[in-house]
Image 1 (cartoon, one colour):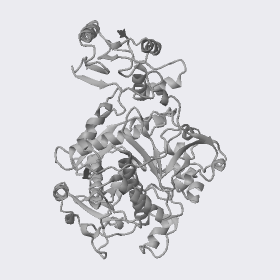
Image 2: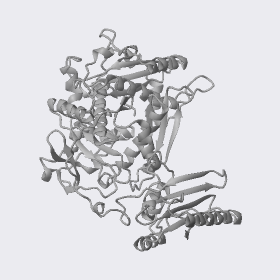
Image 3: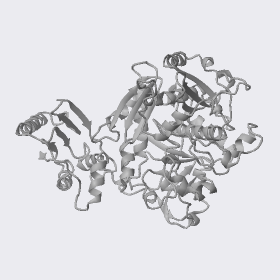
Image 4: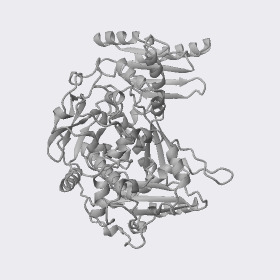
Length: 606
């Protein structure tokens, strides 16, 4: 039994290595402070070790880690524990009780690979599962101790077992949640919390938040602030689907962090050509945006910041990505692929974002989700920045009681809700859902988007994305104005200013035929592999290459990938030449391409 005032004490590392080498089980206890920590009991070759625990614990101590990095004399920053003689005795007695139980039940004790915290103020206890990390340098597997070149991605046939608003899935939502819920812990979890924002009060508009951190080694207090705000959203037509969605998105973000054990190639763009892909082929900023970047970046939201022009002779890290289109590896800057990569910190020529990042129960499921996201963002950008009026979607034609009830709920809270078909040239159904207040001149216009081979899924994803924003502006002040509790000022500016009168593209074009469910061709199948291959073939026909980076982490197990299709547009403000200007003319939506300064001055605000 090791008693400590902090689980990150430097001496614990050496003790852990000795205990592991001698295969001696041991238990860690913190009997001081207002929250007592009991366990875990570490059993070599059976549970994770202290090194596994410390990795997660540091990951969730962003403030302490930041402060410690500012002063080299600190190995870590320990907070002074608050205690009384009585609380110390309580902690010691509880620890002694658990030791006695462990001696009687060595293999089935509840602290076997787990820790329990007891809050002495509330008397609440919480269990935290210790994840055994295969990549741990002490107790992990030898194969993970050095970065390995990735293997080609080989798709397997996967029958679709679940079709609903969350997409087509190989596992049911309950199975998925149960499989990964042990990763939730404010202390040693990859996900710090999963909590409901909205839903129980209406039984329809479910929205969840999940906490995650970006352990990015950032030295700026501004970046630290953004890191601490790291939250993932979950949406769905049911409480379970929204909760599972939030958990999986947070695990997806965790898996996309740069941990410094990823395989990369250090080279220059010019030396790696033609296998290297220029970062701006993926971002697609315009020359004008680069030229005006300094002034623009002073006032814009972080989503729309323009990076520095890329130096093609700069030696950087390149991540190998597998081309599903041409079955070979290509190379993309690692700073574009991973959150917090060191090249981003040293020279800002690009940064990672979540476009195309997706999680799934299988690799095929994740790739399909990622493909649908990049298609959705591309269609949204073409519609939004060109401000093109598109046809209405007949929501009632989908014959879903959920949608009928949701429209009634929105009416009851003095909001309209409608849907617009914004499907572009790829033909994959893409839908925008729009809602506005009807009882106030400030309309608080909400938008949500969805794309999927199944138009029902596309529609449900769009409306449930609108639901996600409701908690941020559903409250009202005494004078009837909105009480905004959303953290992004750009979104609030949009809600205060935008109306359907000054943003007419948000209203369906009454001159165009309404799109009913039966107007969408059936293009999905019953197999995830077949659907992915169909999408890859479709994009090939449009001259687009599908690239996939596998970001699955062995300590999590949830399949996570990043889909990259150079040429498809993000819906953030990236105004370079290409599909943004060409597709509206190709489809006959516009007679000629708009000039860059004619595009929508409003950027997508999320």
